[in-house]
Image (cartoon, rainbow, N blue to C red; front, side, top):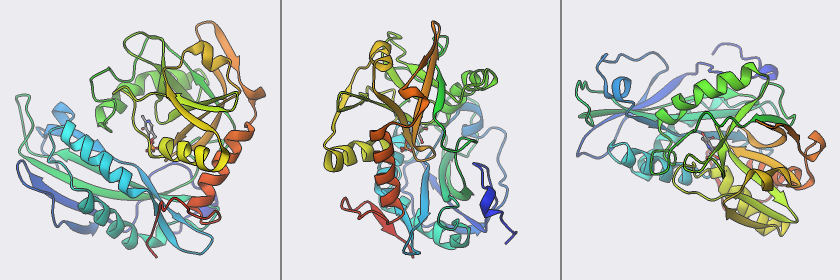
Length: 338
Ligand SMILES: Cc1ncc(COP(=O)(O)O)c(C=O)c1O
């Protein structure tokens, strides 16, 4: 194992010991598979994934806890979402138990790469794609599933400062009735151009509006969005084009059970966003990250004086506390591995 600089982890790929791989044909079920040394793969230039984007993935993390255990967080929800994504992309629907066992096996074999407490987490990336060749547009015959892992630090390079988001009405992330609610690879390729443009102008991420009316908030390129107004926690209603985030669900449950904040799923306008008391985004990679400003065609709107709001801080503390076993896991969300 190469020496890893645990004190300076970014959100980058670090090669680890092994990766999981399995294959499945149309009409069959996912089974067996196993670990192979981490490395490159061979692929036909005509592979379904390369030509028609037939691929989807998941993102989850393994955490080292204060009890020096390694735990997965709500992996059952990632497994369910993988089943939804595979079905939508005409990939043999992945069985949830198969998925969970494969993730556990991969993390256990790479346990030495789970960063020490306070240094980071082990990001886990299950990915599945159409392997066999196709020249006409159709679902291909054979599929490959892999899981690789990488020790990571904060997603945004300056760590925990509030984010500056950009709304750009020239682009949408996902269409209604499209594949926005699946974790399809194509959703991310669509977001690269607006993201690159926003970053070159000094913003951290893009905040997308709904593709039908350009009126309601959807989500950030890699995270869900929340606002707090008058003691209510409000997040965009899932209307088919928004990803149903594991962290989104967790934050709503924590808010209700621990902070007496009523979670509401609604259509949210920009006016409501700018009038809110606190804004933050949620995701496996970003955890709970406050939003300090939002720029649109009318200029920059500052939020919460650019500071982390009280509720945002509490929600983050409880979520991270559960993941680190500092706060009791009343919800039964942890899957201990070791
Ligand atoms: C587009 C998008 N929305 C939301 C999320 C948050 O989902 P989760 O909390 O399951 O990580 C992600 C992934 O992190 C994402 O890629």
